[in-house]
Amino acid sequence: MPRDHDAGHEPPDQPEQAVPEPRPAAVTFVTTEHFTLQGARSSTVAEATGRASIFLGTVSGGLVALGLIGTAAGVGAAFYAFGLILLSTLAFVGIVTFDRVLQSGIEDVGYAARIARLRGYYFRYAPELVGYLLSVPPAQRLRMQGLRGGRWQGFLTVAGMVAVVTAVLAGSAAGLLAAVVARSGHSLVAALVAGAVVAGAVLVGLMRYQRSAWERVSMARLFDDE
Image 1 (tube, helix red, strand yellow):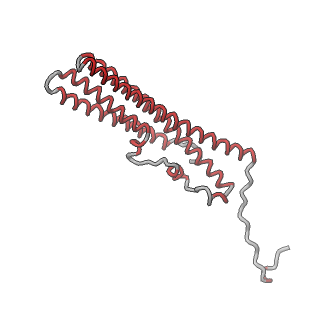
Image 2 (cartoon, rainbow, N blue to C red):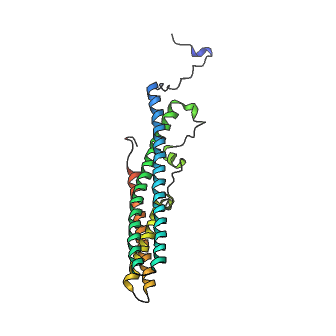
């Protein structure tokens, strides 16, 4: 029987549409997936750091060996031959290290995006947690995890650091080769010019490759509704 609204009684407020309770199996899966992704992120960071440390240790040992050769044999044919082989090898190791740590960084961002997605699930089914867990728009969730963009961000990554060291090694190898080829009073100038040109070209090439890789990742759709 309809209520008499003229009797001074206000109609009750319409309750908001209740969000259905998630199934326990779904909650368990989401929680497990969150911790699994967090562990995967830790693994990518550890791998990138470990590879960069191995690379820098190899560079340090190689330069020490080059200095010992120069001290023992002098700056002669043996020094130039050893230096060219060593610096070229270190530059190659730097390139492959750069590529792998870049892959690890991209994997880390993918894991972070999936974690941000799961946090949205928590806020949907437990809105009372919004005041305790930082709730930000989806477009800013990666930024809140310390993953910022910008023109110079590429130099702040592990891959960017490896790229700079690799460019210096490649430039040093080119400068040493130019000094051998010149064999004149201007060998130092030729070495400096050749080294600077090659180092700059390698650095620009690696940074462009890194930027294009990040652009491809940013345009890729991780989820169908993005």
